[in-house]
Length: 463
Image (cartoon, rainbow, N blue to C red; front, top):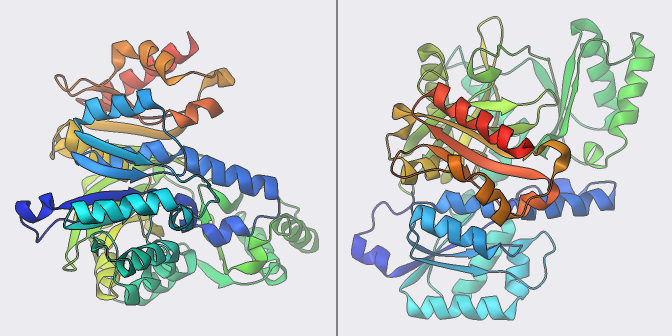
């Protein structure tokens, strides 16, 4: 993605280094967990999602991958063969704290290896899941040690504020409100930005009793954590009791007191439009050009937790696809103007009344990036128009049966992806299997075929 403007000869002289620093992206949020065991669990789960990110690099033939957790050698070989990777070097710091870039900087062997790569190649092109302060500090240190570093998917230092600001619930709400005057269909669900548990509980209780539902979001949560959805009947009918109940729930985690909070109306999604949750992903190049990648429907559960995506013709009505793409461009032009570079997406809610609301923006690699990059490599650059794709980042295996990657690979043999037919199942993670989860992508010639493969996969898992 970020190699535009460089000749093939120049690109051959650089080594791509990928850092999967997921926990760093939401570190203040993780740090604010009241329960330290829960904090550790969050860091460990994020580390287990590492091998999935290999597919974000599916089009690269040679690269170094720095991960907080060791990867299953059998899975690595499966990935290399599937994506035809010639040279994949994997580096793992001895200690993992959740702050991967700090762990790298403290690890003498890895720092030595990066300096060696810097001498062997003309430069290092370092990319990451998210452009965090820790990532920038690591890049700065390498440059001070004489390594030439290019960051093709990151903003310049003076513009890194865009990552946290526009990637936050309050930041995207401000941008939407300002630009809503320019474009009438650029809307968010009615809401306010609050602070503190006491005020928030009062605002939320009032909205809940008036509208029969309310959504409360911390400024920058993660994978459903930091989002509370209250529907009719969930809370007491009397204001005092309702306010007290909400305050009790918010008091369980320190992040509600520490960060801004968004209180907004509960929107009933229309499941016939991208499952009720359309999405569009883009990439901003180093020259500031905003490039549209794809639109999709998101697979979201009742608690608001993201599961995966559906990509393909017909996943969104043409008018909705056009609207989310246009709005995504408009938002991206503001991101670009303010200096952001790299991946971003815009999440939407398709209401039953026909209105499409902006929900949030992820200003980083997203939950669908690896699906898109894998699709380009395995099926072809026009895969979004010529087939149908289903993904799930953490499918809970029935009965929590624990599979080794070797056993799962053998079991799924009949439906594994084939480059010849350009259909089948791609296993995206080995690490998650130990926790009873399967991360996967399914490619089919159409929606019916993709769903049939997914159904067969679920049947095989329970056999």
